[in-house]
Length: 254
Figure 1 (cartoon, rainbow, N blue to C red):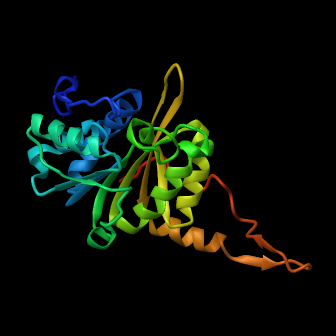
Figure 2 (cartoon, rainbow, N blue to C red):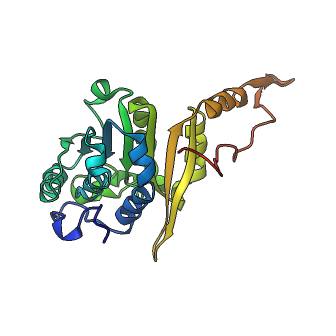
């Protein structure tokens, strides 16, 4: 295992806390692949929403290491057992983060408004019956409701409020979550996006999407939102709109 990420043997556990699995490893691998850019990014505040075992936030702190000694780390989880386990995982790796027992970022919005430079999220993404969303204990780690989107759709507006002007969001999604639709939604808020890692397992196909604020994307989104009145008075989107125009390829700084 790469020395710059958390060691599984040092990750604490609890019967009601989600252990690191394929999705956790995929998210950390994406961060590791982006390490040089993250170091050059020089984030002041890094945040994980839904920290679970603490494997991802500890890995982020380790891969940034001494080269980013000015960074502060914050992690949240709705499961109180996850808060304790994350603190134990961080301590075992010699890392520090403020870990808060809260729903997404409730109570932190004002303090962190437009301040987070790097946000990582492995959300509850599994399609489940709606009544399972928000359950106590370990079920809260995966229950995503219809299409697995219930919690993701709540997280994105919060991310938009907390991310700084140079903020990056790394979001793990499942094919069933319709990542293209998620990117379109964020595009309308002025975010460019790129899938930086795709991984298929026996049970699912995972995508790690990176979002960042982009002036060109914002201007394009504003242009596409201009509506024209038809003869019957119903609005229609600009004919120049294409659902794939948000993808960023080739040379980029993000």
